[in-house]
Image (cartoon, protein in one colour):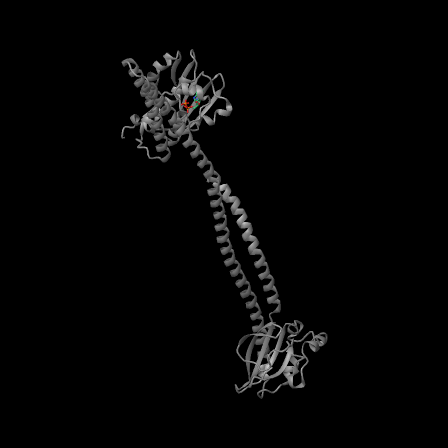
Length: 461
Ligand code: ADP
């Protein structure tokens, strides 16, 4: 179920990502395509403008009668051909290309077969052509300034038309300069092909990589989901144990016909013990969940660690002597050390560590609580000469419900939540908690909490 949910989420994330990226890339591709077309057309039109403008300026002052070809046409455009003398098109032009004068004003135009120059009379009839003469462009031509024409083969031409005037400002006819767009169209076709192939490949790559990234992003979610499941099953297991014990006790008592007062008292005492364990477990779970959700009503006040440790040593001394242990404290700081925090939570943190040190140290051992300061942090070390923790276990002991030796921990009343609570409290106080331990020699739990100013040393609080 969980695996299916994660796979579905991962797939839909990857799909959405690929679709969105595909759309963005398509829009970008379209814009790039348009920009390239514009840039090409702009430079082509600039060329057309300059060629037509120059021809116009050279020819116009010599014109005398509308539609009459003056000698200047031949001088400026050496291979100009009159249409009425049945002009050869590309072929002839191709042969004559080598014989064209190199020094001609428009030799670049001639050399480049992509240009043609046409002269049109007032009634729109073609009079003469020069340069590259495309096949089957309409002979009766329109005289719009800018036109894009297409021949039957589908080749496109951009053409500029300018009117030519004779001296009394009468119109002589028109000059048209055109250029083939074949090269542009070829390039654009190649670009279209690149875009048409590149886009789907890119979208596939994006889809694949987002599938992989979604997997990476979901790993922590997956981990915490598994932790939650583990936690739920551990919690149920822990809650079931005292409940089963209560149930068994009650069933045994119900089987007894005549219950003595002593038996009744023993039974109730046993139920009370189990009940106490249950209540403790539930309150630990509640505390943990509130610490997780940061919904615990926390009283942030300056807390004096010297006082807290002194009180705790006093409180635990009876337990320590009952276990035949020596419990001491050493304060390695001249000043009292204060941290900002919740006193109850700090007491809970330290009492969990001291209680563990006592629990896991055999008779005749030694537990010492050291308080010192280091680089703006208060450092509390709870040292014991107890059973120690194997290196492989040292990280795991902070996990919820984790116990190194379940049987032993259970007999000592532990549920495996003590260190998890200690760690959550330390984190809520922006500190750190870690352990140094050697199996069979003892452990040291080190708490670091950020120091705050001593409120008593401040004359103006
Ligand atoms: P528990 O309630 O079982 O003590 P904790 O979360 O407090 O749970 O501790 C987790 C485990 O870490 C314990 O079961 C124990 O095995 C190990 N542990 C904790 N403190 C010590 C210590 N001072 N010495 C040795 N082992 C310890």
